[in-house]
Image 1: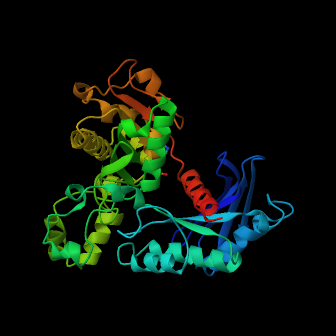
Image 2: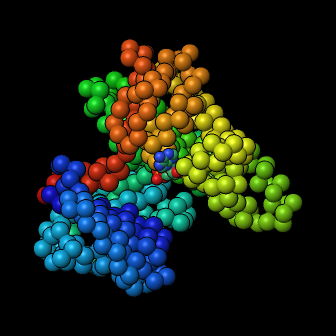
Length: 400
Ligand code: AMP
């Protein structure tokens, strides 16, 4: 089966054409600068071929058309006709409390994604544009929506409720939703598979550490807690996001610097986190380099990040009454051995260890805890696209 996986952002659209049964990716790429001018980067992993083209993309419709056209291009394409695509799987950011799992896209599903726009005002409209552009380009082709929030819908109320007056929950659905759900689901399942264990018998702390970061506590294959909230601003400090803090800070900044609430929250989303702390960059590679050159602010930023992740691993172990596996994934989790070592240092009291030699790895599946340690710590590169393609295949086959 060939599944086209689409991840549409406000001005960009990533795609992968893959076989969900094998995980083999036949083509992948990125449309950028949608609404401005338009640029397509297309790669064919089997041959290493890379094509870059400027193509006008006033809207997502033209971007999808450009993707369709390059996929069937006689020189650069990988299929003869669009008919060879069996289904399309879309990453959708916010499913609110309406979606506990992935679903076939029909009018009701699209309306529900629309209803969740107030919860995901930046992403859900872009996701819908991607869906509608595919409907136009490939009429009748089965499409599936895979939600970043769905995996977290198994959280109990004690984990997802905010301690604010109940009417804001009952009337406005204000609660913790959590994100990166597809990634947490993939790495926790893959970790169990690699260990030859049943996910139902494992307590896993999944650490998705990238530009955006979140942790999830996964007990018996079900998410019981996660660190992002109503929006991705909550939890750990991230590339440019502040993470958890006293909301009184928002009022103080807004009053003193004559900002609206939106402006102050924008500051917490775009100018804070590692960037705000270090004044150097939001990118962990830049921070590591600056810290090596004894840049004090970069060192402090990294220390704050590591401390907050370390505390949260222990918190989630407490939430589950124990932990069997800690998994690291995403850009930092997969590729930054030193940051992993600093995070883990100090958790030995709960059986969590780090073997320096095994930990000296980047971007590959690897156990990094000491042999025989009570808790297994491992690196599992994430693969959200594969999860989206597999959900798409299952739902489409079920429907047939
Ligand atoms: P992601 O959002 O998952 O793409 O992760 C992006 C983050 O991963 C950026 O902050 C990168 O600096 C970081 N990253 C990628 N490769 C490395 C590396 N080799 N060492 C440290 N950080 C890295």
